[in-house]
Image (tube, rainbow, N blue to C red; front, side, top):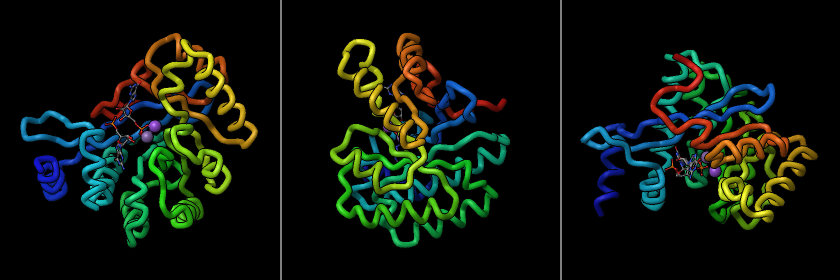
Length: 243
Ligand code: G
Ligand code: G
Ligand code: MN
Ligand code: NA
């Protein structure tokens, strides 16, 4: 399969690269960016993660890609002097790899990153077979001083279970609810309740897929802490918030 060859080549040649998307605070929280993987193709165009992450996962190699992208993102932080929070996606598959956590710590030490400024995103979209393992992994990250986010909150089948058992700091609300909240009162009701629930649990909220001004205004009026989406900023090879 053509994409499997691409994935293998990308790992071998380290041609998986990070892009950065701003996550804008609505109040006085610190600035943030999310790191997203792209594959650099021979003609210098970029292939989006949606087109290769699942294939890398099915090949059992997504942890190698997550590692390369993390290292390149840390290099960029060091080179630009970026001082905000750095959100990084972790595949539930990477988490199951034996020495992944150890290698992650080594990388953070090597680049002198502050764990308190790194937010690992765990999606609730994929069903996790071994919740106990995920809990242990997330707890180890927490104990080491990293911050944690549930990604795509509301898209899975065990949202409350994740909230109850994972020691998280951020809830990233499923973009579909956000994008539709100005048209569909049900989506708005979901978003308002998630935001209120997160406040009661003292968690910060991020609205994804903020695609226009109307949505941004509603997101702010509802009291969500952060806005992310094409209207706030597209994923880019440049590090936002630094020149
Ligand atoms: O960037 P894009 O819209 O193609 O992202 C598609 C999916 O891939 C999203 O669910 C996103 O969270 C995921 N993704 C993006 N970058 C990474 C990464 O570096 N590692 C992992 N595991 N997933 C990523
Ligand atoms: O699953 P995760 O939230 O990590 O997916 C993030 C992906 O969503 C990004 O890789 C990006 O390509 C995509 N994305 C970011 N902002 C928007 C947006 O405003 N609208 C849509 N449709 N997709 C977005
Ligand atoms: Mn994400
Ligand atoms: Na998401």
